[in-house]
Length: 268
Image 1 (cartoon, rainbow, N blue to C red):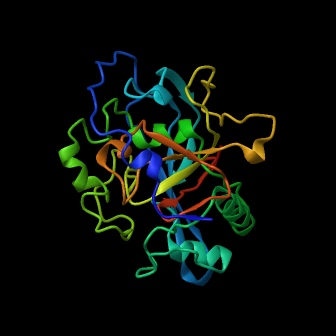
Image 2 (cartoon, rainbow, N blue to C red):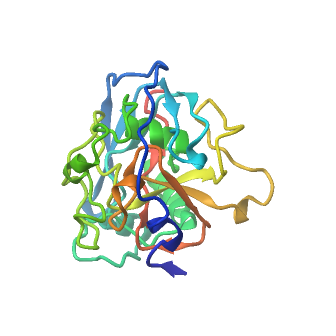
Image 3 (cartoon, rainbow, N blue to C red):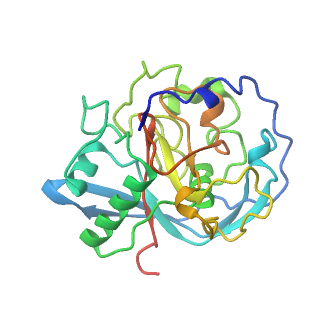
């Protein structure tokens, strides 16, 4: 199935109330290292290793972002950019995307299942164990030590400097890395494409793990809805907040949906 618009979510939230001051300790940006994987045909994949730390996950803005809770995250590496069409083609041998005008555009129309298959093949190519980031890892990486609504602050008027969203995208994806990165040098964490995470969907964080691992239900997991993060080219600023989350079934192909990969940091 191909979903062109997300009707439930595109207009359900228009305004926001400010988040009250957060006094919980946050992990400030620390030392980071980068490494590059060589894929087929001269295509490379840039990864950024992030330090272990803790952060306050969620927000007080929506019920599915509550309760805010402290999470400890181990060191891990995450893609500097969302997976591009060129990278997907190099690994999988095809390009399912709708917006094919530039191979550096993020791949889209990929399901959660497709992303899992990509991670398996990438692991075979590199000898590392690649996977999707957990929701906690994704938000930790996105926030990069911040507690604000966005990783650049609270003013959504600045979003256009950091993200391709519904107000500046012309209803299409754009080459990765054109907007400003966050404090950890990660690009397109807001906007461009939604990014699949490993976790099953839960309607709140009540009972969520606090160790950064994926929250997976043991029963009927193949039918569980999965989480997506970051907003996309077709969404209003509220959906590009660091804490915002939506869900879809793992076999759904969204023209606004892509992913980035994660792995254990080399040397650990």
